Length: 360
Image (cartoon, rainbow, N blue to C red; front, side, top):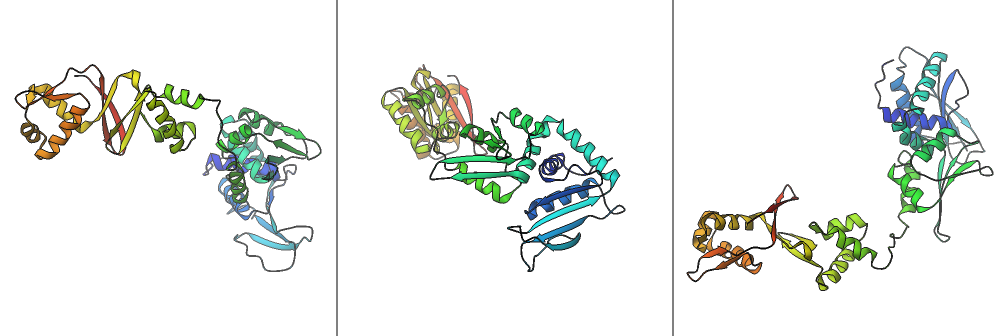
């Protein structure tokens, strides 16, 4: 059977069906939920897997808690009923056929064995039966995935992703707590299929404060990272800290003579002082290349070679002099200094800094 549908979407539907579908019957595929987006997603995916033009038509049942109008965005055959026990409207999508159900169960078995698809199956499980329990006052953050009894596949998927959990017999649900576990779930976008749950899950995670490091740990780790040039923005992203917090630490290290910084165009690069490095732009590097080639040159000659005006060339040369890379000899010509440090030339292409070590 040829399937014109994304494997990821199928895996997500497998999770939805295993979580909420009636998987006991051999005569029909059903899926129940109060989220119209999920119903529509399941419906569209099933009908891509099994073209229904010549087969049995799908049916949609809508249950309302009270009488009234309800806008249904589906073109299936729809029947509307009352269910006074329901808190909000919910839908049941159903398509029948013994052969179709047999094929679907074969697909479910295949995907259940494919570990690469397991994170997407988990997304379906959570969209169908997961919920977010968050109490800001008590600092309580919990994820629950309801299951009437233990589910070995679900346990395996959580274990594969390093998510510790416990099954509560009283709650008939898998209970997941602790920041590390919740961040692992966030990494695989566990709540992405359900808009409301996804919003609540992200809002809950956002209430965590930043990780706290032992005294001076942050300073030591930044110092270790600066064996190569980095910007404060790079360090902030690596450590999950604000740029301001990183810059405060860099200032302390600079005051202690442990690091130094070089401004290249609009970026400031930091590096350890013991690396004996000078960083310059590719523009300044070309002045050094000319002096290496010709030995000595006047400012006018350098401006002509670089095709710039006298003032522009003179400013670049003064900046190189300040770094100890060039000097003016008694006859007012520029020449290279004896350079004991390595020079890194930074060529900014397509908004990304390309670094190249240059020897003189």
